[in-house]
Image (cartoon, rainbow, N blue to C red):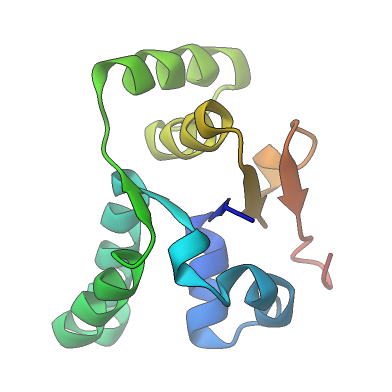
Length: 128
């Protein structure tokens, strides 16, 4: 089943973080993942800062196995509406709008998504 794993989930999974086991089932088949280009930006920035350019490019290559969704006018306007409604940052608005527009679950550990529709939320305070 297709889903969108938020940047925090990728980082948990890549670093074997405390929530890695919660995110692992969603990461088993990269071809089933929806990947907004904004998520690629966030992951590349994080991975390059924390692990270096080679690792960052390897992570982006893994995202390329999924369904990469570029930002377009319709998606950006929808994301702007969601940002106003929920007080999202730019990246969070794009990520939530992408999942919502495509009708897939957003898998996350970010608190501001916790009570929103079509979200699977894992608490950072000890698993989901």
